[in-house]
Image (cartoon, rainbow, N blue to C red):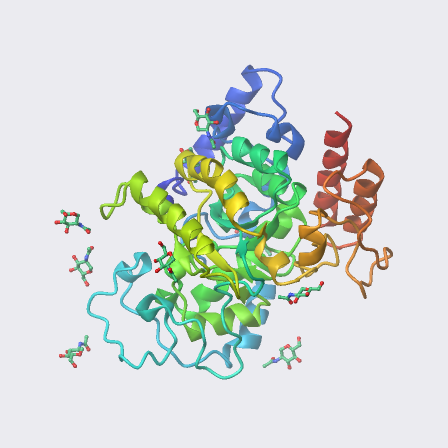
Length: 426
Ligand SMILES: *[C@@H]1O[C@H](CO)[C@@H](O)[C@H](O)[C@H]1NC(C)=O
Ligand SMILES: *[C@@H]1O[C@H](CO)[C@@H](O)[C@H](O)[C@H]1NC(C)=O
Ligand SMILES: *[C@@H]1O[C@H](CO)[C@@H](O)[C@H](O)[C@H]1NC(C)=O
Ligand SMILES: *[C@@H]1O[C@H](CO)[C@@H](O)[C@H](O)[C@H]1NC(C)=O
Ligand SMILES: *[C@@H]1O[C@H](CO)[C@@H](O)[C@H](O)[C@H]1NC(C)=O
Ligand SMILES: *[C@@H]1O[C@H](CO)[C@@H](O)[C@H](O)[C@H]1NC(C)=O
Ligand SMILES: *[C@@H]1O[C@H](CO)[C@@H](O)[C@H](O)[C@H]1NC(C)=O
Ligand SMILES: *[C@@H]1O[C@H](CO)[C@@H](O)[C@H](O)[C@H]1NC(C)=O
Ligand SMILES: *[C@@H]1O[C@H](CO)[C@@H](O)[C@H](O)[C@H]1NC(C)=O
Ligand SMILES: [Zn+2]
C-alpha cells in the first residue's frame, strides 16, 4: 500500500503551517473540536491538514509518523516497560531482511514447512504454538453474525461514511493506525463519539514479523499503552485489541501484543477492497467478494458460527463500497455487530468507560450504553442498559464525568464529550 508515503516527516510541518494559514483565511469551519470537524462535508476540506493543540504539544513524545516506531531515547517509562517484558519474548528471529521485509518482501527467507511460529502470512495459522497465547479471533461464535469492522482509519474524509453508519444506527470495530490518529485526531475522536469500538492497527502499518522486538514493542506502545500513546491522547481510551497490518503476525508478535494487553483480531475472508488497481484486482473482484460472503450466509456456511471479512476505511472507494453493500449485508445476516459485541466484550478499553452492549442487548436495539464497567474504581460505580442509540444529553454528560475520572486522557475525553453533548442539542 501507499500509506507510508502519504505524509513524510519532512513535509508534515509545512503542511500544517499551510493548513493553518488556509484555515484562518476561510470561514465558518471549526477545526478544533470533534463535532465541528464532523460537520465538514467537502472531502477536500476534510483532508486539508489542521493543527490540534493537544497533539501539537505532545508531538515529540512520539516517534515520527509513518516511520517504524522505536523507543524514544528519553522515554524512561517506555524503556522500563520494555525492559520488564523483553526477557519473556519468544526467541523467534524477525522474518526476512529489512528493509524489503518491512513491506512484505520475504524473498530469500527460509521458513520450515512445519510452520513453527504460527505465521499467518505463511498458511493463515491462527492457533498459536507458543505456550500461553490465546488463539486469534478470526470469526465470531454467534451464528449468522458478521463481525463488522474497518481497517486503516481514521481517514481524513470519512464524514460521509460515518454519517451513513450513524443514520443506520450501525456500530463497527475501527482499527486505527497510530500515525493516522496523530494526523487526524478529531476524526479519531469521532469514531469513539459515534459509539464505534476502537482497536489499534499499529503505529506505521508495516509487516510486524519483519521488525525487531523493540520496534514491534514501540509500534504497539505508541499506538496504545500507558499515558504516552496516540489513541489515548486524542480519544481518552486505551484499546485492548489490535489487527496486524496485512495479517502479518507470528507467535513472537502475538506475545508482545499480549504483554501490552492487546488481543489479536484477524479475519476469515478478504474483500480485497484495499487492493483494487493491483494484482489484477478490480472493483468487479471486490463486488464478487462481497456477493460471495452473502451467498455463504445464504447457503449455510455460517449456520453454526459467524464470520469476519476484511474491509477498509482506506479511501473513498472502499468506504463507498461499504455503503453500497450495507443494505444487502444487513438483510442477509442475522446480526451485523462490532467484533467486541459479537464476543460479549462489554469493557473494550482499559478504562472502565465507555462500555459496549453485549450481543443480546445490541441485537435487541441497544447499540450504545452509558456508564462504567462493573467493578470500576471511578465514582460512577456500575450501570447498564440505561440508554439506546439515541442517548440523552444527561447520559452523555454522565459519561463525560466518568471520563474526567480516568486520569491522563480524561481532560481530552471530557472536552470531547462536551462536544458530543452539544451535538445532540443541535
Ligand atoms: C523527549 O525529548 C523531546 C525533545 O527532544 C521533548 O520534546 C520531549 O518532551 C521529551 N519527552 C520526555 C518524555 O521527556
Ligand atoms: C514487571 O512488572 C510487574 C508488575 O508491574 C512485576 O510484577 C514484575 O516483577 C516485573 N518483571 C520484571 C522482569 O521486571
Ligand atoms: C524482493 O527483495 C529481493 C531482495 O531480497 C529483490 O531482489 C526483489 O526484487 C524484491 N522483489 C520485489 C517484488 O520488490
Ligand atoms: C534456504 O534453504 C535452502 C535449501 O535448504 C538453501 O539452499 C538456502 O541456502 C537457504 N537460504 C538461506 C538464506 O539460508
Ligand atoms: C494478471 O493477469 C494476467 C493475465 O491474465 C496474468 O498474466 C498476470 O500474471 C496476472 N497478474 C497477477 C499479479 O496476478
Ligand atoms: C456457499 O457459497 C460459497 C460462495 O459462493 C461457495 O464457495 C461455497 O462452496 C458454498 N458452500 C456450500 C455448502 O454450498
Ligand atoms: C483518505 O481518503 C482520501 C479520499 O479517498 C484519500 O485521498 C486519502 O489518500 C486517504 N488518506 C489516507 C491517509 O489513506
Ligand atoms: C466520495 O467522493 C465524493 C466526491 O467527492 C463524495 O461526494 C462522496 O461523499 C464520497 N463518498 C464517501 C463514502 O466518502
Ligand atoms: C453472549 O451472551 C449471551 C447472553 O447474553 C449468550 O447467549 C451468548 O452465548 C454469549 N456469546 C458469547 C460469544 O459469549
Ligand atoms: Zn491495514
